[in-house]
Image (tube, rainbow, N blue to C red; front, top):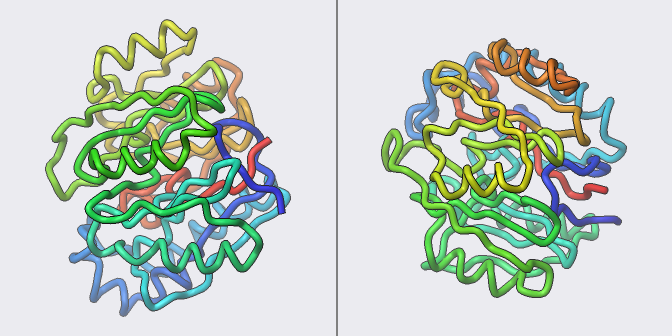
Length: 291
């Protein structure tokens, strides 16, 4: 099968998701485990299923090939956020033993499944290195920005560079802020989402000045999210193709700015599915092949 995703906005032709039935499993399971996963309240399982039905329909209506991860006992609630255990390069998948301890074995389940459908493995980040997919942002096919924070460390970055040295020309290392603390889910992709080759939604308050200036110098229009909409995942958007995105309902200011710039916005209710676990539409998906 075709694979390779060294872009954040090229049209998605193949994608990986995991349904709540295989990740959240049941209300009983949510009741028992949401606190250890540090969710913002316990999700209502029936509401999650309804929200996900709308989300999945958007994905299936816009992506040719949709693959679904099966249940795996090595994973927990957060495995619904399929983006973080890996990145797909032109040479294969790189897997991450993630910084959040409860997600440490997720990459094993994802690797097993993707190898079964024909996606080769380029390598994996090994301890003491750690890395999460939300910290790896393709600026273009040859340029990647990596957030260095609590979830991705220097050794993880060193190993990633070694694995990708044949397909990447420039690495931009972005120091991440302390934010809401060690346990908070703060990735580089928490503060920036490309919606087109020359447009990105950003939360500048958490963005280093040099990186913000770098983006502006490259001619990228920065669409600013305020504090309230940032807190409701207003900077977490999935580009289905250039100028067409999936977005959580509840961030009208960012949505209006996008639509004024000609970006098509498809929305889903995501309070129980996305907000409680801090995982928007980017987190819920792992694109396998972008044009």
